[in-house]
Amino acid sequence: ISYFITNFSLDSLKIIDIILILLIISYFIRSLNGLISFTNTFHMTCTGATRIEDVLILEKSENNEIEKISDFKEIRLNDITLVYGERHILSNMSLEIKKGSHTLITGDAGSGKSSLMNFLMGFYREFEGEVLVDNKVVSPKSLRRLISYAPDNSNFLKDSVLENIRLGDDRINLDDAAEACRISLFDRDLDFEVYENGENLNSDLKQKLSIARSIAHKRKIYVFDNSFSSINSDDKKIIIKNILNLLDNKTAIFIDNDTKSYPQIDNVIELNGGEINGL
View 1 (cartoon, helix red, strand yellow):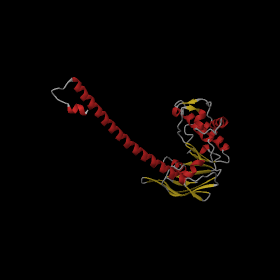
View 2 (tube, helix red, strand yellow):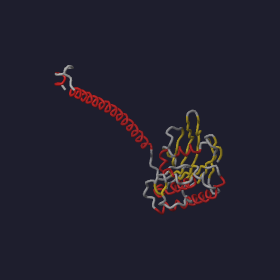
View 3 (cartoon, one colour):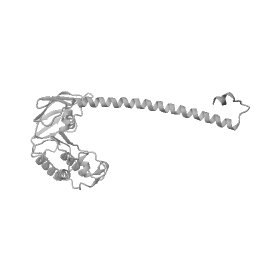
View 4 (cartoon, one colour):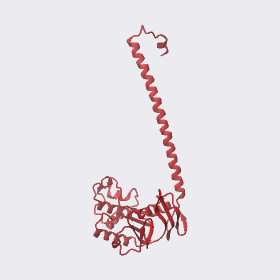
């Protein structure tokens, strides 16, 4: 390059010189683009690393809040208040859940039923009041490991029925999965392939598979959050009866407005506007 600059003359410019100039310009452009690309990548990497560090710190903080609870006699909520914006989604709610009890929670849309379950699952970081397990204050996140949850609308993998029930938990064997399907009246074979998000299942079968999944993952508390909304009334009554018989000494919470389908239930709690309206 220095030789070319020293001996450069416009009068003596030849084709070979033009080619050499273009090659030099191309070289510098590539180098400049590489520097710009490196700068952008470096900036994104640093930003990503900072975010990952923030997540790890948050997870560590949350893990420090979680106490290991292997069993309980009573869970008590004392004056729990949850606020979303300016709206109170739960207001000074106090509730007792005894081991082995079967509870039905009812209420109109927006009454706080699902918010209460989400709170028990530890999905709310900010709240007023306290959660006690056997008279000991704990974080709601500590309860999450005790709960097997069946929502009204579950996600499914593109995999067999068995793997959709297991969700990676190999402790659930074939007999466990088959028994769970029997209880929920899910009538597909364990090797039947489920499409992603259950596209080859109707809403009835999706809910039955979700219920089977919840039952197979053996926990101390089972929550069925509008889990029967797409199931016909005859099947629903049979499934509920099966669940109550299976969970005779387990704690079960049902969220449903159809009180007639629960003749054997221990407690009925009615919510209204984030408050307990009746027991």
